[in-house]
Length: 269
Image 1 (tube, rainbow, N blue to C red):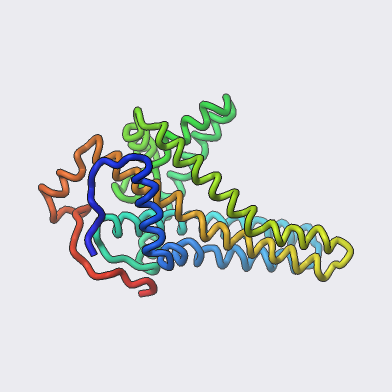
Image 2 (cartoon, rainbow, N blue to C red; image 1 turned 135 degrees about the vertical axis):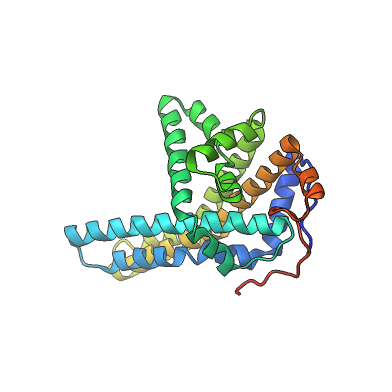
């Protein structure tokens, strides 16, 4: 395969390329997003099956939080790294993408934590400033992983790249939020109805609650790659527009980010 053409894209073309990549490498992205969520689901099911105990419940909540954060980091980082490789015409796989995240886990956590603090601090002031900051910081994670930047440098880099482009970032975020909540509602609603109708039957109530957790994790694994793919493509589009990244690749095809000829990526290797 060869990488996708590097040129300035309209918003519609960014979304079109997002779904093209997702459809073409569906199993790859589903594996990167879904495999880290298996321990999360296991802890959720174990928590629901345990007897009531304050100490045990507190320990399980703490462990679930840690596992959820790790799953989030691996799915985010793995998806963005996979998009970067595929977008530039390089082979990748589930194992390679998730394995590369391990070496960046500390920096990635710092970027996401600092991003969350910045957006949260702006939201405390007013909702609109918080949304604006979220739009300006949309590409901080791709910048961190692809350019090997630290947390502060990544946020600064995202602010520079998205200057005068916050509107397109806003549309991408809105699209992702609508898609996420729509999928959660579509998948979890039937199970929620089961919960409502089984309030007098503890066995069936427990069953439907388990199914709600399963459905929620499936919906997350299916939909979360969409925003990450779109964010990565948007990041490259900004670099093409502002830094002539396409010309840099043409002039230096042997550089780290240069597209290369390759065979179709192996999904499980």
